Amino acid sequence: MLHAVIMAGGAGTRFWPASRRQRPKQLLDLAGGRSMIQATVDRLGELVSPEHMLVVTNQQLVSSIQEQLPQLPPASILGEPCKRDTAPCIGVAAVWVQKVDPDAVMVVMPSDHIIETDETFQQAIQSAHDLVLDQPDRIVTFGIRPTYPAESFGYIHRGQAIAEDSERVYCVEDFREKPNADVAREYLEDGNYYWNSGIFVWKAATILEQLEKHEPAMAKHVMAIGDAVGTDDFDQVFENEFSRIVGKSIDYAVMERAKNVVVVEAPFKWDDVGSWQALARLRGTDADGNTIAGHHLGIDTVGTTVRGEDQHLIVTVGLKDCLIVHTPDATLVADKHHEEKVREVVKQIEESGWQEFL
Image (cartoon, rainbow, N blue to C red):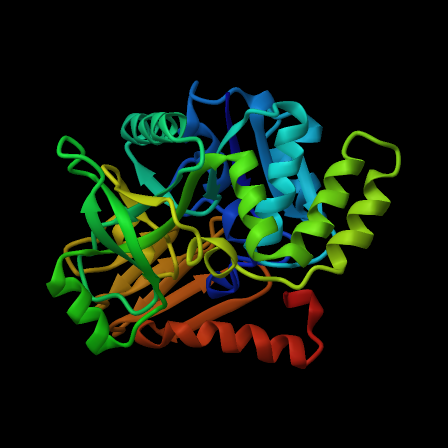
């Protein structure tokens, strides 16, 4: 049976000041209508029932996520006691799912991507599920055909198609780390490289076997947590064992080492919504190249992104290529070409002890 694991522990610091510790990016409405985590659950439609979904987040976000996803049973939202990257997160999710369904197939996905259309996504996941059923030890990931030489994504180097009639499914040659600009251009021109989407489909048993093979110390803690699932001691065991794990991404821990890995060229539209500039792609621009979310009056303003809250009017005069984000207690004004510095802003706020703004 197919189960969905949604990873929702990210901090979303590049979306400060809207994104905060108690309301990070995945809980925000950036595209319009629903929060990102709500859209992620909605995207699954009837492919996975609420009882077979598991959201893995950090402990302080459990209640907020429960409020946003009331259709999920409370037990389907698991709060990690500390941050340990994606491999331990996925390992714990696998032992949790396997307790319910020993033969489970998992689709693992981040909670903060924009994907269209829902129907195309569901069809792609069903096809990946079939690939896993065809070879139970197979690991399936999705690659996004690059449209520009991105330096902020990892890449997947594809090999031969797995069969003559499988034009969108390829063996994986290797995974490549985030490249510099020159290498990214080479990947784009080559045509055999995909952006790594971070979406996977595999059997729970397979990913646990891979963790045990490649990360035995991590697997030992994960299996101890699995043994405690459903017992009165679970919370204590979870905290004790999970905190002892050395964090590592699933790419480093498994994907770069596993043998039977295939990549599916994603048939759906995908955006990882990595920074405020994504709003232009999500919401579009006006005749002056501005992207507006909120109440705004602009005079001689071009190429600017404005996001406000609580009916607050933002007026801009003579601005070009700026980013303005207003919240009730903090306002960001920046050159939009320097928005990567927002992470540095958050770091300096933390170092200053201004916890109320985090």
